[in-house]
Amino acid sequence: MGKDQSINDFMEDCRIKIYNASSDEIISARLLPFGYDEAKHTANKTIYTDTVALVKKNENENAEWQTASELFNNQQKKTRKDFSRIRKKLKFYYPASSAEANTLGLYEDKITKYTDFLQVAKNFYGNLVGMQEVLDKLAPFGYTLESVQALQADVDQLDILRADREKEGGDAQYATKERNTKMDELYEAANEIARLAKLIFEDDEAQYLEKLGIIARS
Image 1 (cartoon, rainbow, N blue to C red):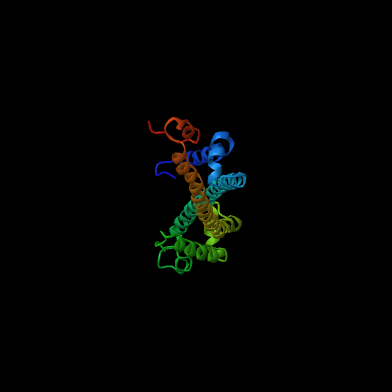
Image 2 (cartoon, rainbow, N blue to C red; image 1 turned 90 degrees about the vertical axis):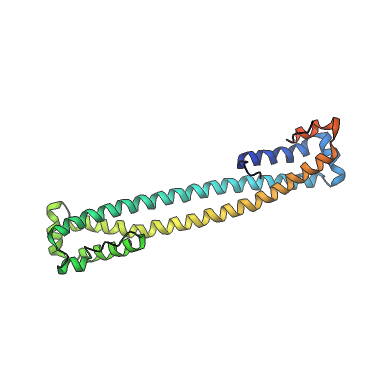
């Protein structure tokens, strides 16, 4: 595939070479002595259709990875926001020196990294649901045990969404590798036709090159 060529342009370029080499009577007849019989043409068409399928598969896998990434990112953003809000309210009641603040990790601020945030948030909610007096302090702000448990479930959901994102990312990478390998094979098949055609069709027969999508030099 050319450096600046899109995948769609590459696929169309290969399709024209492979299918017209088979369907055009003159071209196919001139290619026949070089091993381009019906079986050879069929094999090349199979390479093309297999590549089409892998290109589509790669597109689908990338779309699934993108969706999984967005779900994870949105959930993490929401969870961090909810976590920050509830901690601010508890800090109103509990200074850093209090036993409650220590148990809940209220003043654990080094949570920029996802893994650090996840651990702090899990510890926070895991302890909070069992601290009735602290829950009572949150009641005027509209929090209940059930709403806190829902926030805890949001944190747990991050593990699931992140695992799904990593799985989809791996699937997308494998699909890209699989597609690229088949595209290399397709390139070789189409390029062989082009190279051979340039040797067969010269001068006043250059119009046959154009049928294969090859620009003939004047």
